[in-house]
Length: 193
Image 1 (cartoon, one colour):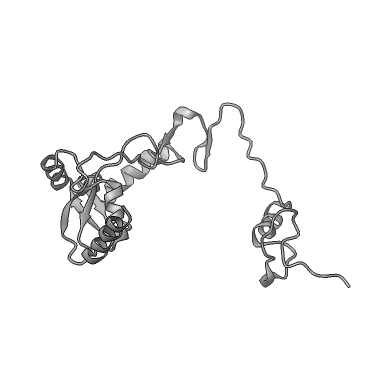
Image 2 (cartoon, one colour):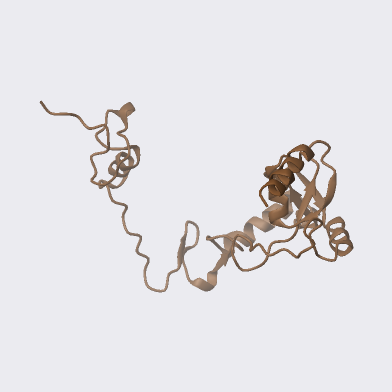
């Protein structure tokens, strides 16, 4: 008696079969077979000298593309300038740099803080964390620069408190802004000195 496998037919895949379609393959390999007539992705070979292919303007050289800052993707310079002109026609006089006057705070940018307020706090604290009194040392996501001090705020009232380094900010969050938990942690550390 032959035992049916619950996993994809492709060697070393390990994903479950796409049972809804009654396929011997997982969802990824099944869709590849239907699109490309193979379980492998086709190689994208561009002609010599072509960096990217634009749907409207065809093959583009490296000088013809705009690299989006801090992202791993590029755009056609012509399409980008046309879309910016179209945006200006639809929204005349609108300042496209408006959001750059703000720093977004909280999970997924729940609210924003004016940069001048941030700069005032930064100068008042002399660029140091309000808790440990040290400068920020944490690197940004691109590992090229040091992060700015975090804007600590009350989760109840959303009022800004002060600027904290990454470690102090995460620590307060871990203790859920609870004075009782922090006192308990201090007592624990004193006990195990």
